[in-house]
Amino acid sequence: MTQATDPLLAWREQFPITRKSTYLVSHSLGAMPAGTRARLAEYADAWDTRGVQAWSDSWWEMPITVGNLLARLLGAPEGSVSMHQNVTLAEAIVLSSFDWKGPRNKLVCSALDFPSLLYLYEGYRAYGAEIVRVPSDDGITVDPERLAAAVDERTAAVCFSHVVYRSGALVDARPVADKARAVGAISILDAYQAVGAVPVDVNALGIDVLTGGSVKWLCGGPGAGYLYVRPETRSHLKPRLTGWMAHPEPFTFDPGPMQPVDGPFRYLNGTPAIPAMYAARAGYEILLEIGVEAIREKSLRLTERIHEGAAARGWKVWTPRAASKRGGTVSLGVPDAARACDELARRGVIVDWRPQVGLRVGPHFYNSEDDVDRALAEIEDVVAARR
Image (cartoon, rainbow, N blue to C red; front, top):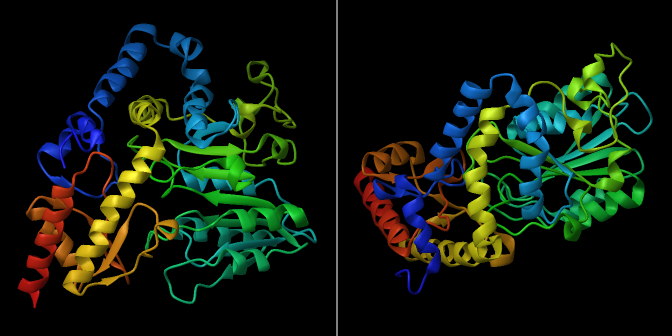
């Protein structure tokens, strides 16, 4: 396709890495927009010329003002999204609100959640939590009805992924969120592998809490995680993992006890990652201009092309074929995926791999059909050579 038939290719020149490689790994690290350099220069200039005054100029408010950009991508109201270093920390802040020694001490999660979060959940056993991991029969998909069935009146929180990181399978969040609300539990959705590739509307999902990060489809780089809390839920969650930025009057330096503000700063703690927020803005602004619906339409077209190419070559595919069941990634069960990934990188085709599901290929809006076709051909050649 050309720009005439695929208008999103006009954005390709804004991502320099696409000129020197076939970059199909945006599910792991999105390509850097050219504008990010200018954003980081703004940060350096502010620090250099304004010094400590940069805090009152804009830095203090940045976890919320940058969060407001993301709120637009999530269909969320202003002031409901705050910026944090990563998803693990963001979820830990929310989970610190619960009394795990009380009668409502169950945390329900999926066995296919990202390991960093599973480690976090398991840590709450020491505080009295009962951790229930809902298994997956196929190791690919999460059954939302089965997850919802595990949620009961003893459940404090149910935590799960919107898109499974290994397989790219899309999980319907609504049945889980509805069940959680019906029994008085909090629903926490990890949307890291969804936002930027799949349209996400927090109101349509009915979710209480959503976390994610900017490393992947948002093309915002590391250190810019985010946390959405439903306004109606906010007053019910009082984090123990907190800090002075969450205090109603932080510059009184009140020694406590802490009473967090009932506003967007409620889930902040200590000094935020200011450079990461500068870096992340360029990617957010591009996605807001394009619209995630247009990105999703193209993503489905390119990932279907990968499915077709894999089927023609007889490769195992770990990602669901139905458009309504998959995110932006296709996992190809080719042999010796780790070595194949290294060889592909030497040839200028950048993908990644995960245990049990092989190579992960993730085209984004700046990729072309030629990128996909070249990657499939190179994978075929690598696989044939290894045989």
